[in-house]
Length: 113
Length: 111
Image: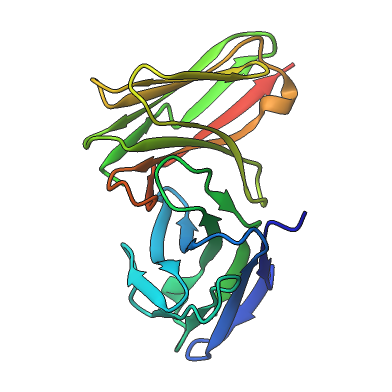
């Protein structure tokens, strides 16, 4: 069972570079989301989607873009990386509310130098 | 998040002792999720509570939701080294499964 798969697991970027963090789930979940985890701040929601073609901003969306062309995939794009985007990124998926388990991927460690 | 306070931030207990971690929301909880994270790894789902007064258990871990207090507690009985890690509570405060998280509790178990 693959669950929620994130790639890459580790990445080092230079300031100003762009990249895409990939997220795929094989559970046919409608809801998908991206969080970032920073020391002392817990996880914060970046963007989320309730289905293909539908996305919305979370708490900290600036500097990130998303799209949802298929149910399975929810990529997160950094357009021009900044050191403030150094973080651990987690993708999550679930069935619609109420009361469904939210599954998380294993994380992507991003360092921007 | 200021909407969700988790305590304590760090906890060191002797193996075999019981412990409790608390999570308090400033808003009505539509759902409260507990996860465990080991350093450098992803989030492992433990339990989800939805109804006031609800209590769930898995092995030696019990979670309760007190809807009136907008608070949840996670209790570990007879702690073991395998319980060590970071425990995170995530709250659904909109009913949309967009979670706000506490800062986490780092649990260390001493032999």
